[in-house]
Amino acid sequence: MKSIYKLIISIVTTLAVGGISGFFTSSSVNGWFKTLNKPSFNPPGWLFAPVWTVLYILIGIAFYIIWNSQVKTEKKYTAYTYYWLQLLLNFGWSFLFFFYKRPDLALIDIIVLFIMISSTIFSFRKISKTAAWLLVPYLCWVAFATALNFAIWKLN
Image 1: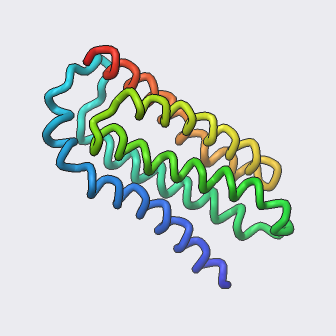
Image 2: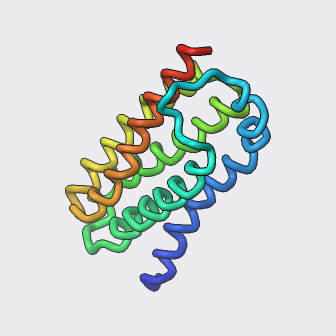
């Protein structure tokens, strides 16, 4: 497969994860979420969409680098496994938090997500340091989101 197609598939797939979960949870974002007590460090709502868009693009590029690398597929298996697990947990968090309105279960999910992103970074690093570094902003944002999720859970 041509490299440009791999790049497009990688980015579109990760953006689709965010887009689909956002589509199904948007009514809670604009309804239930607004009624919750939030900590003082809660960012303005308009910030989330652009931040996640940039992060999903970086995540997609990181995956593309791994997918397109000349390393044998057998060596990529662990990296692929961690990547897809963290993406699934990312997808699930939105449903747990916004659709099911369960900040407690979402907190468990996001803690496991943080661990899986860290594992993805370490597995990507064995193949490409650039791909690993592209995931660091994502890890930082999820660390912040974990603190925010915890605070919202405690306040409500």
